[in-house]
Length: 562
Image 1 (cartoon, rainbow, N blue to C red):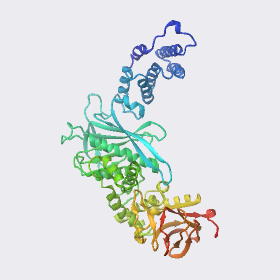
Image 2 (image 1 turned 45 degrees about the vertical axis):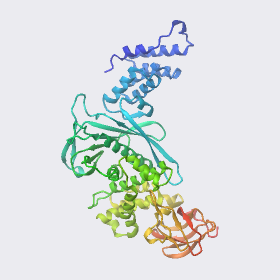
Image 3 (image 1 turned 180 degrees about the horizontal axis):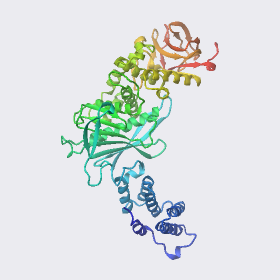
Image 4 (image 1 turned 90 degrees about the vertical axis):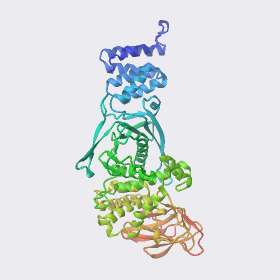
């Protein structure tokens, strides 16, 4: 309650000698406006009180009493976020202000935990915070995006717990949410925030609930593990929003993780809840990362199924690989050396802080199971219409190939254009995404999307963060790519442009067409559908480092000989 607030803040007004109370004295005018605001608020005229304070703010924005009065009025109006901002500014101007600190503490713990914060307020927060940065490369040749993240540490109670009340009880749903299989108690929480790219406004994004050591059935302290889970959830949130614009509805949507001591080892997502089971059992760091990324995939990616094995929807496995690929890419950005350099791997090991993270081995293994399966079976495989485990992995591989071949925007378009949940809907989504890209004039196919099994390379490419990297052709080598073409004319050129080197290009095994002098090879009329492009380095060819193949369509096609 703050009914006696005016008795407190009246003492904050700095007395001004009568001799100085002239109309041309800005400070005297500010004091007068604040007193008028107080009188209007006492009379119940909050609008008038606010008007006087805003006038005073224009005259002297660094006068502390203005901000204490503003915070009070915002509280009365039921706007705690604005009140926090005002009290935060008060404490920046007067750090020892007891009233400001008491009101900030009340706003943190007297009701729902703040949904928004300013980064500058954290130093005055009654809860301890860790802050960090998340770096995302938006695409090849595009700017890097940095987003701030923050999460609480130490003893923080869940907002649902009432004063002097007992732990909160959470029902644990069965798989698919069709029933309740048990209940668990929680009396601690870790709150995680992400910042919008263009400012320091922090948005509450995740809550991680866990039992204290006294409440734990095993007498264990889960606080450090809760902080690690919150930290990784915040990072994968940044990746999913920055790269794919997902989840689409994020305003006031908060993901809640529940660390349960019972249940089979693993995790389950249902609506906005993520249940992590058997948390006392130790996992390897990469296993923890996989579980978190997997459930975030279910949380933010569209449903992709319904399969009979290994689980109904493929978004979890797809998210698991996508977000851990992006984690590997960020490690390269932090280390200043691209993944999988030793420095990038060391950055990942330091992130979890509990031993080596075998992330490179995991990514290579999952690409073999999914991406290489899709390439080996081909885009027209009967697996596209099936619902068994091979079809599940085939769909994941197809989406990973879209990311490897075209980057974030094309995958985002594929996922959001899919008209339904069936696998066929996502294959359709890719075709529509290609159509949209072709309408803009060209489609870029990154060199790392090659069919490695059907290519012949003297020097194998590097297993990079998002795709195979460092694709080089030497004399006698060839690299093969699946490509989806639309009806009509098309041409192909390679980047970087070849000035002194000539390559041969084959379309569906027919050719060769010459690629030289930076010019494009005209493919002529092609039927809509999947085709195969093969680049060949003839005898005597100097080594060529490939970045991409650019397919141009329609009016963008150069005339022969130009």
